Image 1 (cartoon, rainbow, N blue to C red):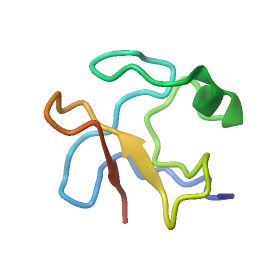
Image 2: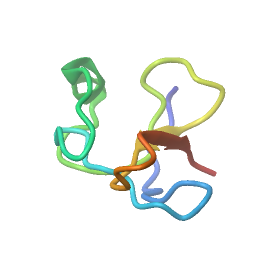
Image 3: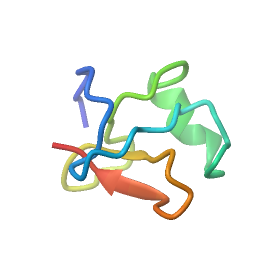
Image 4: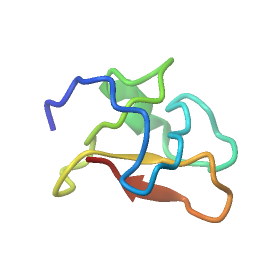
Length: 66
């Protein structure tokens, strides 16, 4: 949960969506409050097993990052 690196791609190579963007995937603003606004870095705001992000791929809402 404390990861603050600069990873911007998912395990499959998809580009991460900016956390303060609601396009292409709408999501809760609470994720943005975790210090992720203004970037598209992989984060773990909700206690998942590892870092993740919403993707810019309309067919894939979110995905884990390495």
